[in-house]
Amino acid sequence: MATGRKSWRRVVLTALLILALIPVAGVLIVAIVPPPPTILMLRQLARGDGMDYQWRGLNQISPNLVNAAIAAEDARFCSHHGFDMEAIQKALDHNAEGGRLRGGSTISQQTAKNVFLWPGRDWIRKGLEAGYTVLIEAVWSKRRIMEVYLNVVEWAPGVYGAQAASRYWFGKDARDLSPREAARLAAILPAPRRYEAAAPGPYVRRRAARVQAAMGTVRNAGLNTCVVGR
Image (cartoon, rainbow, N blue to C red):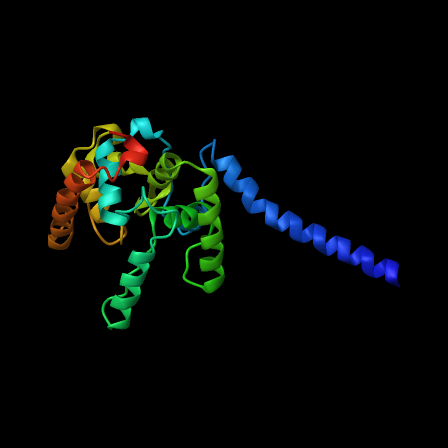
């Protein structure tokens, strides 16, 4: 009987070890190769959206889009270690006041979610997102995090990544995006299925103008140096 219990204990411990190593293995693999189509991409493909996913290295993506992403999504991207506690507290305070729900996710958190997990707001997924965020911040460089983020984020139904988005919205390669175009792409990220970058409505125009103005601060204050240097 005791021998049987020890055998089951070894089986359980082995299974737990394997489960713990799966995320580590995934993060190590994506550190050097482009990620495969994500769960979101496959889900939307099954719903009939199609899938335009064109990987481009960061050297093939305009620095304007890097600056726009930092300006719009995560101003402290280069200084935090995956979690922006100030942004999280501001979001909590804003939501507690009954305003429109606002998130405090960093680019690192969004990358972890987009690449390794499923869409949703359940606590299990949020816990896994935190774990993956710690892993990618420990294993990947900031430059790699930005590179993966800009390649997997959704910019229109079935359109993923900077290259596909640039071709879809502006008919040009991602390396040729102007500051205005980059700001418009960043401006639609909260709801890329609702808004348009090429012919934006009033909300996107206002938001894009704010993003483009903030891009100057990103450049001048060196908030992008972990990605593009000086």
